[in-house]
Length: 377
Picture 1 (cartoon, rainbow, N blue to C red):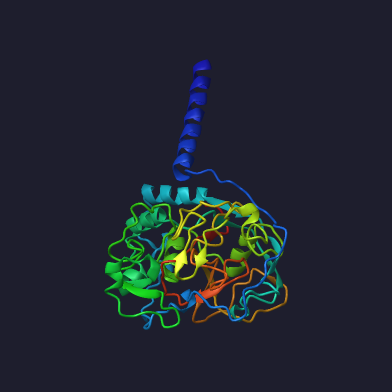
Picture 2 (picture 1 turned 30 degrees about the horizontal axis):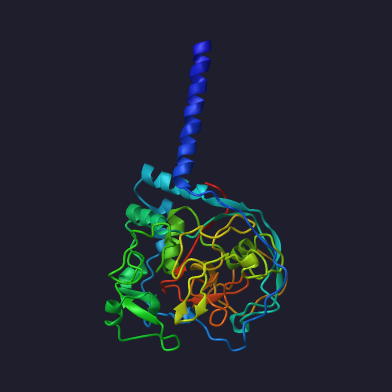
């Protein structure tokens, strides 16, 4: 009858409004998709160019107790049932993923900016379709994970983490007596962790939409597992970074700043002494502050380094491969994308083919991650 039909329509409208409310709550910014091929190829970094040193941030003593975070914090391993709060947190995180249609691409480069990193040779790789977070995991998202699971990061367990000297207060700097020999601007800071990025006198209250920092590889794996996701392989990450473009330096093309526009949070000025902040930031920026690539992904280069699932190696199989996962074991994990500290003179690694490494327990003030999944939840 008419009343039943009206009631049905009313119910459908209520469901639609509820869905829109959820989407609006979870995604508070509208993606702006922009990409540019550029017009000319930039040259490689000078031979023997220095490094920012973040690949050398290794803890002197590795804790032999592997706590199996990926298992302990996965949804299936928890004894308690899935709570409604966790459901909505995970649901919101899934709304912030995009489907990356599988395909073949040229991985690596035959014109390496930093040959010692194993950027080459260029080889044909095919990856299957997968979903990827459109942004790096934020402080807000990581806080939800910690609140729901009680997780404690490795930096919190060790009691310290590496911080760029230029970000520290004089009070904190005066308490430090050590530095990384090859990169003295990196300092081990007691009390530095994801909640206190520059040490005990810093907080993230006004940085909820910034990428979470000071997360080790194990911390990243734990978060992704909790969210029913995983870390991307290096091949998946690089394929996604390129955004559908072929043989280009950056996610948007070959020119670093096409038409004078900044497309990533990088270092401008003289590293490590002066960052002019021409792109609007001297430290991390809120996620999605710069244009997305052709796949709708933000901050694939710059802002913070991103962990991948692969073990580090500099020699690669040149045969055509499908879904490569790197070597079966190793000492370091691959990280990609560079960070806000990257400058061509010191760390020309803000290119899709560029790569670096850290031990799985390492953490720093320019290191974060994003997750992927093979199927939507």
